[in-house]
Image (cartoon, rainbow, N blue to C red; front, side):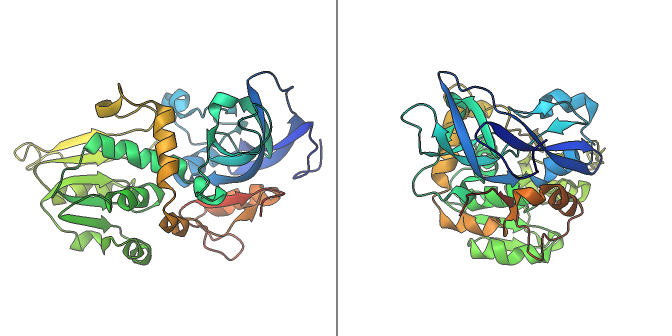
Length: 339
């Protein structure tokens, strides 16, 4: 095995989850490049906190193992498994139109990889490589808004302002709404949301009579508050991922009398209102175009090095900072050669 964090053009080093709260860097040969494929050298990858913390803890529910499988995952849940889906790199070899281009790919944490060129999405020239890591979150937010279909003059709330909720709020601020409010139990998130021009409220102070509430807190308390603040005949779009958790929701009382709707949204499929007119590739390209907005840089924390990823995964799972720095809503992993 090669020294962790070092590679040659013929080998790649990847992060593997090997057991509950255990991981290591492993080296392996790169496959031979074939026609229609591309060799990518990674610049940055992103840590998706909710999903990857479940994988790191080996707590992916058996009932959803197939649904949770990432496009280029190796191994099987619970472990050993090579997992991840936020990668930005440079094409070193491949189709002429892609060579030298910065690209986004749904690939695990690995320093070089070979994939079909069709799996790569070019990053627009006005989107820096680190910011492009947010494409997965913004794509999820796009899907939720296609699902919800907000209308002019609507009153909306986003409950839960982690990476996904904050991405939804960042896109909604472009809409001609009567009211947009970001709701979170952590007052430390007020500064970020208010810097986006979005009003912030603690759950107990959230405004009521909303037309649509988008939920992303992954807590029963958050979902309960959504039911309280949505207006009669209103709709709640559920984006949270609860893993193995059983969530108690008060569907008694006035839930039926008020004719409320609770609807799931999941990025694995294009939202039904656009499913027959948009592809997943078009949705991802749109997400990257929207990331030309520099305000998304505030979602990113200080990067840590790929060579330190086994220890970094532990710190992120425990909710601690990384090397004395705020890990951000999306933690950035930096690879050799990235600036």
